[in-house]
Length: 231
Image (tube, rainbow, N blue to C red; front, side, top):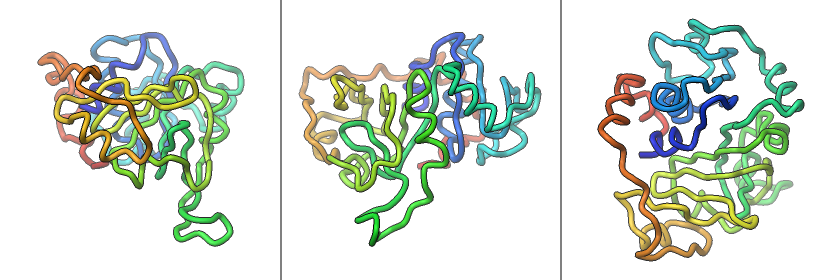
């Protein structure tokens, strides 16, 4: 459901980038290109530009993601392209996501005496204010992940949507609001498992379930179910 929901949010002819540890966005981008966005330009951190991988690797820095590429594009080139306003969509994530769409990849606890030190933002803080929009995904939906306020704001920028296993959030007036609840979840579950107050009830839209066409295309794109690695 998450992969399909993310793929539906991608548009034809836009330039889309994902970075490290991004199997779900990788599969979603390729699914969108197969279904409704054939002219989407796909950039990945491995250096591929519209690659045609023979098989999908579990690591998104694998050189197989350059197979059939129209060109090789370094990460420095991606940053330069974003600075010139030429990257439409970037995928980012974080250990914590708060109701303002800020991402924490730095520390849990106080910055000077953290309980856990995290790996850092890896360029996300540079990209987020420059790209056209940021799509955030997180394969956990619980109060430790979706928090009122992050312990440290590593990344803040043009977040448009947040995709989780239970629902899709959309940014509205500087706050995340539930856009739709996935068909296998419920308003009660979303309220209980979100660490900030959300307005959801029986009238909240339900994410349309994957169609037979989408599921068939997904199996073609990802027959080895690399998408499952993140769960």
